[in-house]
Image (tube, rainbow, N blue to C red; front, top):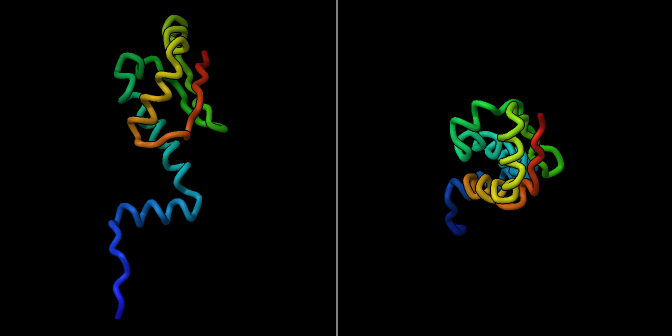
Length: 98
């Protein structure tokens, strides 16, 4: 009996998710969940609905001044969110809605 190369459970799960087209939706959910963690409780308090469509994170922000401030640093936020969940390329931009 031959033994194949041993793989970790994590890498096997990632492989199964990728093969079944579930890796991207999982990463999208992780990015949405990471929003309040990355931006903190103050921003989370003014955050409404969050969704991802075609690589764009849509976030409803209830404060116009906060929305403008976040708009000015949206590309840094993309990077921070992707770093928080350990993925690149899931989102490319953030649209802040009122």
